[in-house]
Amino acid sequence: MAKLSTDELIEGFKELSLIELSEFVKKFEEVFEVTAAAPVAVAGAAGPAAPVEEVEEKDSFDVVLEAAGDKKIQVIKEVRALTSLGLGEAKALVDGAPKPVLEGANKETAEKAKAQLEAAGATVTLK
Image (cartoon, rainbow, N blue to C red; front, side, top):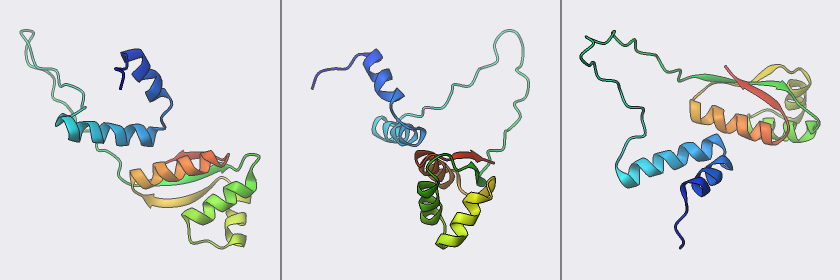
């Protein structure tokens, strides 16, 4: 296998979805036993650093269908696949956009649902 240059690797990463890139980072961390977290600044000669406020990471997301786009039938199929709704209920949800498709989903589930709906042509937001 030929060694890839840094630019070739970057180009390859540009083609990945956010979910695929996230899975790659996790695998990279496992294989090389490293963490890809941003480094923390250390207080230097200038004096102590200001206390860092902990940012609470959101762990519950609502997947909201903003618009169905041109491929409404595909979007209805994806809504049915993501929920336990029947055909009529899924169609009503899509016709009534903006509406939540999933509520209280974890981050991974919400991102996958968003990716699936966007692939079908819908406009989706996570809240």
